[in-house]
Image (cartoon, rainbow, N blue to C red):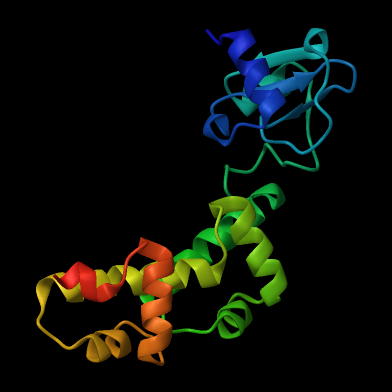
Length: 181
């Protein structure tokens, strides 16, 4: 049994946690959607909730052409931005020295679109993600090695000691030399 009140709250907020868990049929249009559909949210009294897409189709509803509930979650057009952000984050994790323009070219989008997608989905830009990764590597090297700070700066992807010190202090609130002490 589906809790219709919880289902309607999920539809109203377009909550991604419920994608694929249930489907909503709109009685006035005879169309069924995923909870994350970008279409305008119908009134509560016009909604029917189904556990599967097959149930919705058996009840006489047709699949939405925007959110494509007949496709598995993750393969529809409404999932494109989330997929792009996830793929970009994985590429950055594997090769954090890659530039944003090159990353966008590999993914087949513009750098501006990539930045907006990552900001919307992950709450961070590619540059901020790269910077966080560099700082994490630098912290690890400072704690676990006795390398001079200039070597740590270069090993963690910074082009100069000055830029490394500034970024580290901005990110952590203290200088790298104080962390070593």
